[in-house]
Image (cartoon, rainbow, N blue to C red):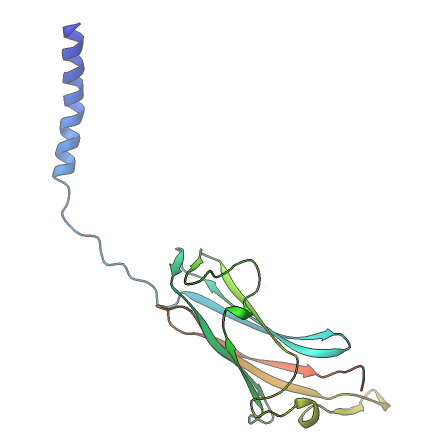
Amino acid sequence: MSGLRSNLWRALWTVLLPAVALVMNSCDESLPPRTTPAVLFRPSISPQTAVTEGYNQLYIYFSVTNIFDETLQGPASVTGNLVITLERDPSIHKTVAVDKSLLLGTHPVPDGEVTLDPGDSLAFLFKWEDFIDDNGNSLYTTVFHTMQDPHNPSQVVPAPETFIVQGGIQVFTTSGFVTLTPVRHVFYYYNASD
């Protein structure tokens, strides 16, 4: 029995001693500094005309997607803006404050914290329903109009209006402002009661 115990201790020391020596003589070099890439998000913006309850509205869907290969987590700062400008008259524009109230979907932002795994997005939606610009003017009376139908001169159709939609958003208090690339959108106002 004592021979077995002695052999067991000898085997243990044969394995343990080199392992301890390896750990104690390990490299004292520090890891290289971690560099976070300058671009963490891919922005997307998609204006759409929505027909609801007999009239058209302008819906603006926009999102930021984590393109970094690690989970991003930190203090939330879901802030930014959207600017919708009439292309033919830039003095007619609508500025929208972006915050958590415009968030869509199942990716909640609890108070103070945002977590985005690689490929995850924060998606937002703004619905321009009243068409009141920053100057307090109604586009129903100042912009939207009809024109003669080019295919049927006895009828009138809504005239197209082109809007430029742009803006930006900040997701984390420590991340930069993500610019949404300007997008042109042709809108046809329609109201069934007209």
